[in-house]
Image (cartoon, rainbow, N blue to C red; front, side, top):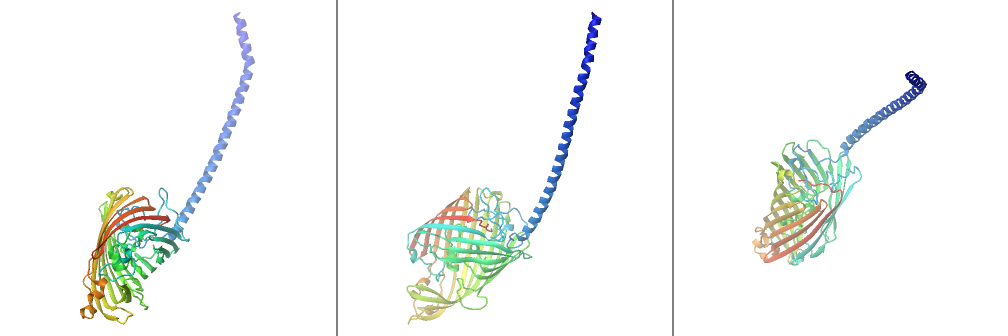
Length: 499
């Protein structure tokens, strides 16, 4: 029985052996095919990876070449600037950063367009002009008739003086076009539309882009760099209107037609020296129909950081010009001044933000002092039978100080105080007894003053809403209580502003 079982098992094993051997060969063949496929796939993958690496290297080389070309065409700063700590600039009309380091103080306003909220800065438009618009409007409530406004004791400038008209007005809107001309020059054109619907050329200039040794040249019509506030467009101001000193001594803002040269010293601290030469047609001068230079000015600005949270800038400027029959009307009679005019300006600004971060809180303190001397002759009742002419000499001054505090994101409050001193003008026709001082009513001595407070809200760097209250006492015995509601909106790639 046992033998029979052993023989059966042996027969079964003999019969099954060929089938198992055949199955093992089939599995080995299938595994070999899979391995071959994997090897081919690995070979193809390595080939594709090598091809992608080559394409990446080519793209990197092309990008480097493009960046090198753009570097020769990118906008250049107004002058070579020294290395310093990380800086920030005032973007208009954004909530103004409180601190900028010395390295940013001489930056050109045409440097780089502002970036949208939450996005990257738009690419530089190398040859076609960048176009930006500033839309401004004001609602004004004035307790006194603005047509009777005057700065008592000061010869009227005929410029941007007074609070403007009652009710709704367009304010000042601007259209700016700016672009690089070539690697050596850039240009800018700014039109200004005033509330009385008059259109004027605010600025139209060319400037150099890559001059050595910190030198920068500008030619055309431009906002002069004398003082501090003069070189800034109205939409960047912290208050609705210009200080009284700017209205009395510069007719609002001094904008010569001429040339400007600046030099930025290669120092860790900010030191800028410059001079300007113009035709002299802008107030306090006037168009004298003469060749050559009709007005010139010089200025110097210094600044530096104070620790990690503050910085300052201080300056001194001098403007010399002249006038020929610079007329004004007073009490129905025509008057005209002819002679020389010299103005000194001292300015200083201090900015603070904790650790240089102005996004939440910051503070700015600004003040300027003006002193002007005019010497020449004054015509009385020009064009009438009572016309007369005599010597005229005056020394007048004025100043303002203002502080602006951003107490939380988007919100700021500010206060400003203005004061002028007319002095005692020497009027030859009065000193000689030919006429009484009452014949020159606007020149009777007085010290105009004004106090202003404001609060503004800027939901983004492109929009600002402002409420301003002012108590103006520019005329004897008259107080003008003023309320302003203002909006400022920026459209397009508007450039950042300097310190």
